[in-house]
Image 1 (cartoon, helix red, strand yellow):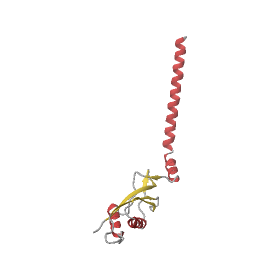
Image 2: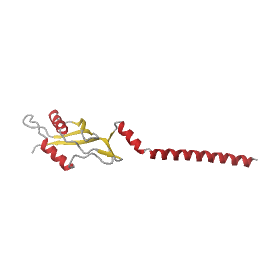
Image 3: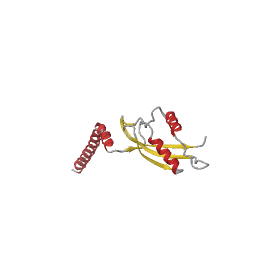
Image 4: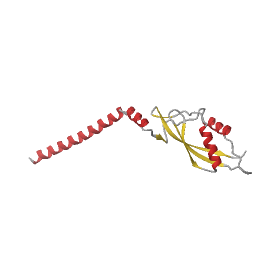
Length: 149
């Protein structure tokens, strides 16, 4: 009798484990099946990514970006010795490639900061970043160096 009771308890425990396993498996399967919905929900929530599978890119690549900065930055004339150094900016590349939310992370001089922001605002639209094949908003950090030539 005792052995039969022990066997019934073991069978019940096995059924609980099997039920839990099937519930986890079903949940995982449903999650994978709804992957596209999850990506769309993330996009609707206006999440700003820091790193994505395909990072945003300036049209023409990194060299074109450096050329654009070199051609468009005007070092403000402030006294005998214009300030030099690096202004670090952060901005968001939107889904359509436009630049928004420009912030200065590291400042050198108020005039240089304003010039760096002006140049970033004048940039053409970027190629937007993508996550799982969907265009997303991405935060981008860009150092702008000012030096005398």
